[in-house]
Amino acid sequence: MEKIVVLCLFILTYVLIIAFSNHKTWTTGGIAVVTALFLIIFGKSDYGFITALKSIKYDVIFMLAGIMLTVGVFSDSGMPNKIADKLMSKMPNAITAVITVSLLSGFISAFVDNVATLLMLAPIGFAIAKKVNVSPIPVLIAISVSSNLQGAATLIGDTTSIMLADAAGMNFFDFFFVNGKASIFWAVEIGALVTIPVLWFVFRKNKQKFEYLGDNVKVKSLVPTVILLLNMALLVCTSFVKFDILLFGKSILNGVVCMVCGVVALTVYCLTKKESPIRIFKDSFDYQTVLFLLSLFIIIGCVENVGIIKDIANFFASVGSQNVVLLYTLIVFVSVLLSAFIDNIPYVATMLPVISGLAGSFSPDITLMLYFGLLIGATLGGNITPFGASANVVAIGMLKKEGYTVKNLDFFKIGVPFTLVAVLSGYLYCFLVFGL
Image 1 (cartoon, rainbow, N blue to C red):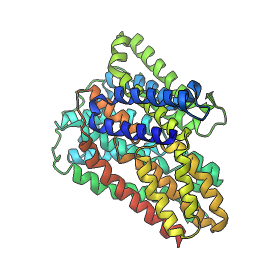
Image 2: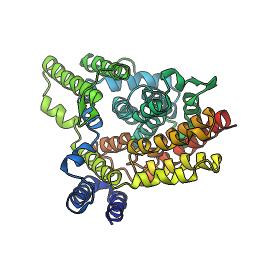
Image 3: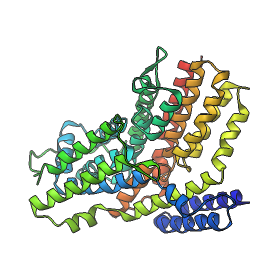
Image 4: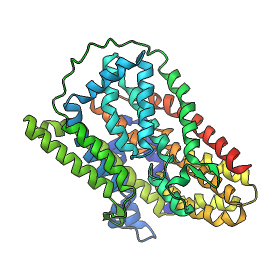
């Protein structure tokens, strides 16, 4: 009974998000409270208030809050406009500049968290859109989906990659070459290349040229830029250190790093330039996006708690070794579909033991193919919907804060074809390299 109720509330959440996208924070928050209370009062499991709190990904929330502050002073300093000017002066037109920034987003996110990457590059995207008088909506969506794509490229690109490496006994270099074969990194890079025509088609009308007027854009301070780069470097370093900070048993080290950088950036900038910290905080901190993510994490935690994700994993186990091509295909494309609505971390955590349990039936290469298929599907599936990945949620929140209304169709027009070509290329690559 509780599974049916939770599943219905979960489906209702996304129906309301799609139908009332402008009010998604409050509708999602309301359903999150109702779902959690239902399990606390009527659930058969030991679900309680603490369980609900544990389901929140605090690392993402703290990273989001910290980088919002750093990016706030970074934007106020004028540096994004300066970078946009320089970039546009080297590009023949707007479309080339947008695709270049999107590819840069993908490259950075192979080593830095996707949300962090988006927040760092979004101000440049806004500046480019303003300079050539185009809507920033597709520009930020392109940056966001590109950042999500490259999370599977390296061991430190995404939490799911770290989880897979632990389950499969892989090290950092195995993501580049494993068992004498080109590994998952190259599948993702091919995926990035095949998405270029998609982005080119989306921005095909934006061929405006930009007249570079010299170094007229003044930068108030280099401090925010230095701290932003330092933040990026520290996020890469934290992936290699054994030291950790835990909250409810989950790592929040990256979040703490970003919070410290954000507070330092805001404090130093405001003291040296005599700017108002309250004004910058109001301009940069998007509380609605933070609340929306908190609510989504609680709802998805409820879905996980009642065993719905385990039921999905059991379905894959039932397919077993009967047909490896069918199993691989289901793992990839069902993962894409589910990750468009379910957070990929609990899903991957549930699926990894299933694949490990089947490993004895297959050769090492076939097992790697299944692992990589899971990673490709679960990582890229979030790009299908505007709420399937945290970076997408943050991008839409930033646009809303700037006064732009993002329709679901605006996202689908980029996210769906982008995801399909990237997933298909990765699916074929892994099959041809590891499955034959």
